[in-house]
Length: 375
Ligand code: SAH
Image (cartoon, rainbow, N blue to C red; front, side, top):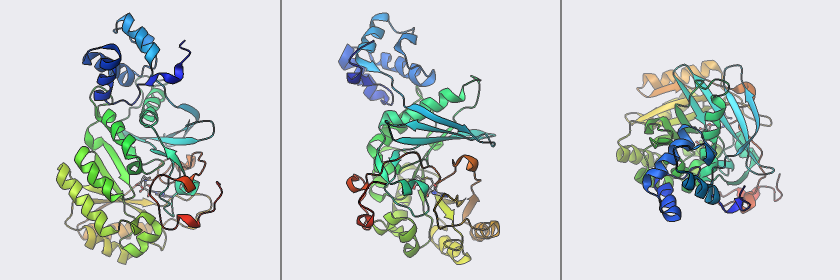
């Protein structure tokens, strides 16, 4: 084994152009060598250059010296009675993040994390309570897919497949733009996970400048956590709204759809009992979204320890949906999956050491009110 393992470049997550540049600059190798490597790493799930039998032996030896394929370690894995699976992955000695696989008859969705914790501080989200520690690297983001694919093939190699990837785990993906965008390139590359752009969804709490930036670089599906039909309420639930209010956010969404020739933005709306679930809220939403390329996804609130919120009644959720649908705004209700594992939306807590006092991401006006010690 190479003693200087720390210096080796982790190839996991390098988009095709970077991998080609790496093999060219280090070994003078042709671009097709990078393409071969990608197929081994992602399609066949190889983590060992020794397995890559169609690469010349010399090249494999050079790779062992200069590179590695290093994936996060699984520290816990759970399966739900509904087939949902959740993995906790170690990010270092103390931190952990969570990845969830949700099987459905016609697809298999992997819900991945983009940060250790989250700095957005949404009042109804379990991840927010953990505070924020750091961004995940590209390898740590792509590694979640690599590991899930391997685990899903055990014991049955023809077992469940990942057909969709959603950034709806822990973290705010647009606050880790630099690493999330290259990871999405790997997800959609036909030599890697080969997912169509509509099968990769980025969900954001509403970082407006980054939505404009994304529109220039990527055309994955966009989901936006709206959760309230007016600024007064959204300021409370999704504090980034104080910086980027609803009108600004919606303008960015319509721009994204125009620019990317997309079909629609999915607006997520958590159903909180007597907070945002009244008929007048539905009517307000209708005024915002009618005639726009928008779909609403109503998410029954998933409770977690210490939350003051309660889930809206089924009757309130159905009525809310009907008001929207009758007014011509498409609204569907998201079925809760994996709740017995605390794997449902907003329940992912992982293991996070809060570093919010040194947070690098968005600074929110009320951050200073947080206790000064790590929790
Ligand atoms: N940071 C991204 C991804 C978050 S998770 C974002 O904000 O979009 C995906 C969705 O679950 C978001 O819409 C989020 O607001 C929602 N969510 C968070 N906590 C929830 C809870 N306790 N119950 C139901 N949905 C929740």
